[in-house]
Structure formats: structure tokens, C-alpha cells
Length: 275
Image 1 (spheres, rainbow, N blue to C red):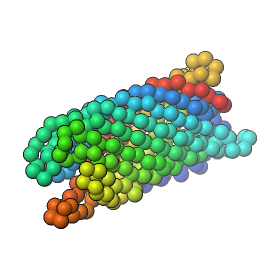
Image 2: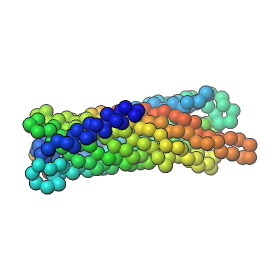
Image 3: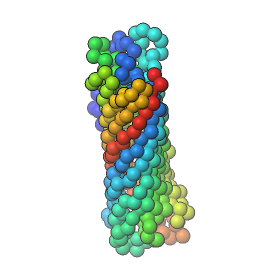
Image 4: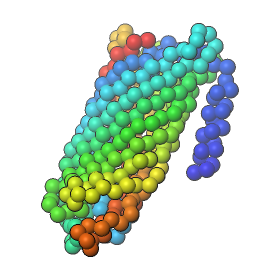
């Protein structure tokens, strides 16, 4: 991890050393727009415990966003990059786990709801002569999972996972045609201030800090003037660190174990560019 962070820092330093011009029109248009999208997300969840719980399945969703990539000053200057994205997914995914207190195995359904919002701010630098825009950025946001197992008495019934996150990343925009822009970005984030609310037991437990990694691939096409269509593929991996044991009804000890979640999916949408 230290080598990854060190290499990431060197890449940012190299990009910021460029004497960059403002973004080429295709990139500026693709990054300066409001958007609406719909898609699917696959979730894989695993608890590092024996016996532990596992979940997997597809959920449908939508997203809304706004972004801007605008020159700070005219001429040879970096661009100011800002972005705000909200994503919502909900649906039934498979739960393979256990009953509370008895530990007996059970298969059930999680009527899951996922929410995620992320804000970014950064500086864009154009590689001279090729139009590629490199954007190192800072990011912060919030994510949550409302876990609703439909069998009463099952571990995970009416649980609410939530966490803030903060970190940074790098985005590359590549104009592959006069109106078509490809993009890739990667993020290294830290989950902070997280926890779990167990509604059916009346308990609230805090998580320690942990890590998250995310990669996005995208295509944006200016199909008619300011109207754009776009597609996105994404992959995300994170850990919840778990909680300390908490006493329930005087003699039961309840705690949330360390868990691993991987989510990936695809979205398509429309956008209006105001560049």
C-alpha cells in the first residue's frame, strides 16, 4: 500500500509540473454538464467470521450528477475541476447466513437499499499536443446500506451500515474523436466515522477507519449540440472494520465482524453540457 501511495504521489507531482493549457473543447464539454443515468450494480459481501454471513446479487438504480471543468484564468493555466454525484440502488439480493443467538444456518432475501454521494475538487492539466487532460483531485462523501433481511430473527435484520469517506484520486480524459471522450479514474479513500445501527436490537456500534478503492471507466458522446449520451463501468472494494462487543439483555455479547464488500456495475445516461 505504501508503494502504491508513493507512486500515486509521484504521478500527481509529474502532472502538476506540466505547463498546461486549458482543456480542449471536447473534454471541457464532457466534463461541464448535468447528468441523469440508470443502471445495475452487483454486490458481494462477506464477513470474516466462522460462521459468517454472505450476500450477493444485482440491484437496479439511478444517479444524478453535476460537474464542471473551467479555466481559472485565460491562457496557460490549470482548469478547476468540481464534481458532485449521487447514486441510488435497491433490490433483492441473496442472503446466506444465520439466525441470531442460535447460529442455525438460513437462506433468505435482503431487500437492500444503497445510497452514495461523492464530491470532488481538483485541478486539470492538459498534456500539450495530444489534448489528454490529467486531473488529480480530492474527494469526500457518504455511503450507506440499509439491510433488510425478510426472515425475522435472522442476523442482519433491519441493520443500517453507514460511513463517511475522504481521499484522493486521478482522472484522465482522452478525446478519441471530435465529439467522443473516454475517461478513466481511480481513487484511494479512507472510510471514517462509520458504524452500524441494529434496529431490531436497539443497538448502535461504531467502526474504526478502513480503506476503499474505486475505478471508473467512461465514454461521453456529444450526439446533438449540448445533448450528450454516456456510459460508465465501475468497480469498488472496501472493508468495514467491525465493532467492539456490546452487551445485549445483560448476558448476550453482540458485535459486527470485519467484512469485505465488492461492488461493480454499469450505467448509461444523458447529460446537458453548459460549456
